[in-house]
Amino acid sequence: MELFIGIVNYLVFFAITAGTYGVLSLGLNVQWGFTGLFNIGVAGFYAVGAYTAALVSGPPPDVWDGRVVGGFELSFVVGLLAAALVAGAVGFLIGLPTLRLRADYLAIATIGIAETIRLVLKNEAWLTNGVWGLQQIPSPLHEPIHQGAVGFVRARPDLAPWLQDLISKAYNWFYLALVVFVLVILYLAMRRLARSPWGRVLRAIREDEDVAAMSGKNVFAYKLQALVLGAMIMGIGGALYAHYARFISPNSFEPLYGTFIVWVMLILGGTGNNKGAILGAFTVWGIWAATDFITGYLPFTAPQAAALRIIVIGVLLEVIVLARPQGLLPEVRRRRHLRRPKKTGEADSPPP
Image: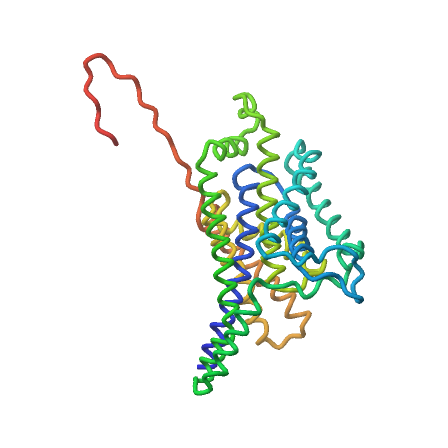
């Protein structure tokens, strides 16, 4: 039973992490899946959202901090909204000079800007506490839920040990429900936007922006809107991560974990499909976690096991991509059938 409870607790942690990556994947899907914006700077928006939430909702700097700003101790909701707004503002400022670039040039610009953001977070200690990061970031409702669970367990010493362990981890279940709630709200909103005229314009730009421009659409404005909206969603993902981890540093937003793994999630799940973006996040993170367990049982040193883990992940993902080149859930393309005009006296034909 102890093994079962340990597995359950780990699955809750796994689902929280995968759900956070699902939010990032939804944001990238707006930019790349719907609009065709080759953004390799996901980690930048992710980091901006995390640091904004930590500075807005976290405690004021103490004598050990190198920063002199932040620590307003506002609520989790305010921190979440601030993370979205600041990440969106950064996306707006980045989009103004870069969105006139295409394909590879836009990718180079965005990855360079993301690394610049990470270096700023690393070196501007007055704002971010530098390489020491931000600690004691509050989790929403952590104290009442945790104390209530501990008090419940202490008042009932006759409970089975496995049940005590399960109840004592009640906060993780609450945070999982919170992440799932945010993920579902974002999914429903993105699905509605994708089916709206605005979403159809984005897909037209993705297919051929010259044709969209000749149709009278302001291509630059739509691309900027998509970049800002995707950045805001990524900022929300950063806030969810910061409030759960309770500690962030520039190392948390390396390109591997902040950008490239999100791209793999979206491509594997299905570009242009919101369900595929979420499924890809859970699938790739499941592969990542499983390979960690597998390499742990092999007779290798830690560096060798880490390298082997990357190789195993690459091979597994390559097999899946070769078997499903359009992703696990490809984009559903809706076709509209044009009716030919009826001739005089011709009866209506039955629908196909």
